[in-house]
Length: 365
Image (cartoon, rainbow, N blue to C red; front, side, top):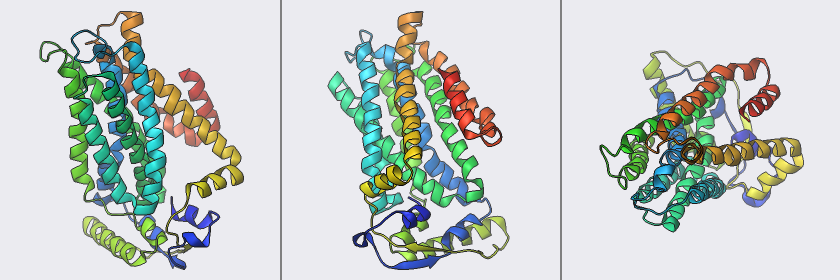
């Protein structure tokens, strides 16, 4: 939740962390030239989309192997679809649950916690021996990823300068398919019975996700708390200290002094913004936007992911593709999706959002 939203939402006095403050912190962050600090934000936070792409495609890639004799877990094709639905359900509930926590306790605490949930759950997935345990671990893996979205989206938008925020968001979201392609490619190796037994290779695939998560966790420890979250929640002194440290590091990195900030905003501080307040604002003040956003979310999170999760089993069932060869097809599929934002992204600014969203949805179906 950014400071403009926090200021404009209808509020109640019992949600205030303090009074009304005037701050130049957003302008100070937005005026910063691109520096090493911003790359740390992208690597430490933006890589969550790589993890999501890895997880979604991983199940599609190993799904057909999990239905075979000797896999070490007795799953049917229907179970693969059920696991996909449970993963998406976990992501939705995780976004709602951890989204409230990130507003209450801060971005940094939650993007560390949610990554820990993901690492633990995907590691346990590798040790699944029965469908119910597989479903359970997929739910918590999804919850971790959903919580990541809630914490990371907020932190990235609050730390990246406004002038490049759109391009950075596009690049970060596009890394989903980089993770998907990488996961599919590595699964070709893990599913090869020349190197690993049928009940071992798919487990190592999930272990790969946990290993990547640990690497990201190390980088993420150095990402600061969002100064915008701090001053909204009554911690203006800490916000000033963090912004001062960021400015010092950027000046040292670029070798040039920063220009003065030229604007400031007035913010009514709050301890927490209840979910019902956000819902009331969305559906009463902006009902058409809320419905449109919900429709786009359902189209991506449920319909598209349902197809992607079951792609491996569809290839083996209807096209007689061997389970060890399924990841090859998924690599091509992922690379096509990765190229989409890069090739079509500029058209969203020139042609317009509405025709491009409608056109890409129709073309994809």
